[in-house]
Image 1 (cartoon, rainbow, N blue to C red):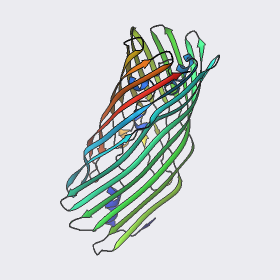
Image 2: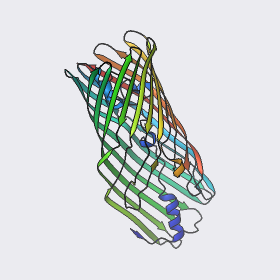
Image 3: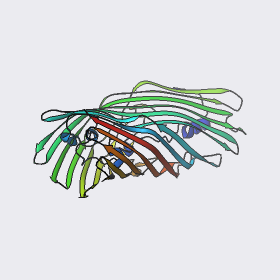
Image 4: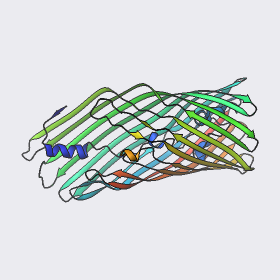
Length: 421
């Protein structure tokens, strides 16, 4: 690093230019937030107590044990839009700076292939529980300056799984999935402050680039018990992740033009720096109930354990997120309308796992609703639906340090299809 900045200018940089963008991202702050699975997509991500679904490779591997033949299932968001707003992202020059970011995702979320042997059922899955793209430009005019922020960000989380499940008899089944997890974040940002009536500098510009990739392993272990024709219980334990490798490339370049027109520069560079992204232990209990045919209810209660880690150990840009023990709640329903069609719906509550007692910033407690129609025959399955997810959260205002309310919306349309050969 090299730096020749005056203390007053350096204070501005540390408080604003290096302040991380809010950037909505689906990760362990709000685990399993976006719709995933074949029917589970339309049921508010409730699937721990479900049997006979290819989506069980993710939700509860024991549910694969009742599948027959060879099947291929795919589902995903054909289009998804999100935005996040706050009235006070920062206070600069005596002015509240409002902020809005938005982005989209339009790639498949789940691909599962299953095949049944004499005793065991096997599956290969590719699951993307969180992939978002952000493109944004914000500009503010204050009484004495113009402030600008431009962002481009892509985040992706991919789970590649190998599963095996079998029926144990007396209504019991068990299964396991070994996941290889690929997580990546790529971001480019430009931040600029240009005073119209200069006092300590004439221009301040920061350009930052970060590319981070982490490879982890984790296992999902599941059991299921059907004690009565009208209800079924399931349990899934997903182990904490084990890191295989992780690296970050980072470049931050800041240039200021002082009162006399003299340029000053500061630069931070990291190459192949060790990087962590730790996924904590997660336990889900699920129940499927047939209170009255042709109606079904699905309820999942999930608990994510606490975890904390250094993101880039030993570096100046490292942070230490603190995640608290957190519950999640998912409720789904199915109404069979004809021999081949059914209506699916779901509700979810997904509170932030960030630990407010340890100064956590940018918390979001999410609520969601999903619905869709599903068509199936002996060999073919098709589904289409929509989802809406929203939050009332808070962000820490730059400079003042006070907390400001924020709102997030995620709107999307989903398709799913499956075929048994």
